[in-house]
Length: 290
Length: 288
Image (cartoon, rainbow over all chains, first blue to last red; front, side):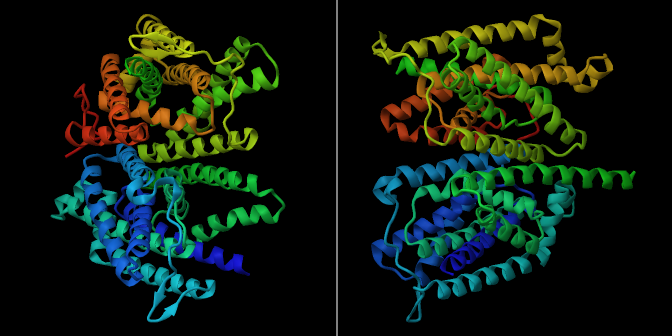
């Protein structure tokens, strides 16, 4: 039972991560591989503040969001110099730089040793020690963020993002500030990812840099791509599926050492197939147009 | 430090060349190129240690196998996708998917721990200009210079090489002149994969192998390519030189653990201030 609750909490955390990436990757058309970096910066900020200074989550959460927002602002200023595949490479570079700061700046982050003993969240005198109470809290947060993202993308700003991902120059010609819209969406996405990081740090109570590697970024991006980039419900379903996939493999009797690799092989194949499918839709559309 | 720079410089420009060859003809950021490096190393391990073959036969066999895998990836994955004229970023994601699948197949079969096909004893290196250099590193430098020169001759002097050049500089015009794009791409994939395989075996002979070893090397080669700008060989060479020097300077003055970050910080600085690299060739990848 405990294990099922654990999986449910992971699903809540990854739903926040993948839906927040969807704002950038799906709506404003920038495929970022730096998402695990924001996830990590949120987790580390909150963990360090609460372990070293004993601050409650109600204080560390806004600070983590603020820091990730500032990082995201700088990152997007740099990354927006490029487009398309160069954009992916430069965000990949930023991810590597963030990881290597977490891993190597040992005076602050303790490097590969990680940060142990992160206190659990306590709100208004209630301590969320048990898994079930944490799950309810995580689900509330994830639901709230889903609501925010849903409202954001159906607002005029969301429509502007959709328009610019379809045709940037045309959107510009309508007098919309494309550059600013891209930056704002990137900052919002980074801040929301840091919320997932805060939840993760206080849930697991021990973090080290290996949870925030480039593989993690690729995994989150695969969820978004397999979930169809923009559809929040489908992204949620893709999250559930990909988190439960190793369990399915274990259920049919695969040893767990192979199950981890099988999951990766599975989502690698899924990525290729989904891209293939995208291509087909596009050619169909073109045929209708001509 | 000088010898270290020379060693990494030769590998960067060697790998960078094999990558550019494919990039220029197909315009694909071929991330699964990274797996060619690991595959070749693991195949050599498989043939020479597990099947007890002669080291040289196993090297030749594994290079041939890698060439086959490289062309196979193009023929059965990239080509159907290219027919659909999908944007470059989708191609990159598909290529990342291929990389993930192949890398995990290697991990599943061989395990994640470090493997080695070294049967010789590790000797103390030769002293050269106040630094030590091992036999393997000298072989690496010589082999990369020789192979780079041979590939340059191939591209410049033979018919197939000239066709590759034609297709990469202007596909439509090449098509009009009756040059088969298909053939040029296949040749460049075969040559590129073969070179990457040789590089992988050389790297594994020096520092052993893990399934993910190729990714970092490829990223460095891509960085060298981007800061060099997609122009001629000498620009790639300048990019590789700058990258290798900066990395070893940072290892010398800070710590070797910052080498990775240094490479990407240089990339970021370059993309920010000089998005077209040394050569200044416009690529339409960097705007504003």
